[in-house]
Image (cartoon, rainbow, N blue to C red):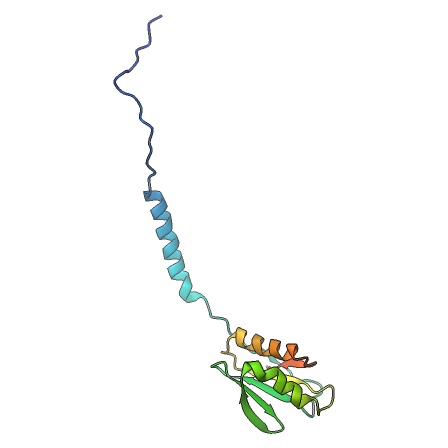
Amino acid sequence: MPAMASRSGTRRRSMNEINMVPFIDVMLVLLIIFMVTAPMLTPSSVNVPSVGKGAKVPKTRVDVIVDKDGSIRFKADGNERTVPLQNLGATAKNWLKDQPEDTPVLISADKNVSYDAVMKAMSALQQAGVARVALAVKSGG
């Protein structure tokens, strides 16, 4: 058998550097994907649904109106005033104590108002112990 020739002068050196080019390519592709899709995402907004009329309209009610800028207006007995979110629950509770037990509080908001502003108003009313809280919708189809 012939002896195997060894290459004593050419040793394989281990590669101790990571090739970053594929990693950079993948990151650039992901960046392009996010840049293209980000403008297509819609911000959170309440798109008020359209429904038919309710069977029974309450005689007395409180309107809580959430404006586009997030400010809150409290409308009861024809009087309307701006109320800070921190005082909304207490204001509604004080007005409701002289009213019948089933008097609803109706939250009305423009369809371009952020969902967060409407949920904060609803949460403030529920934390104050308001029994009936409803969301206003547009009448008709």
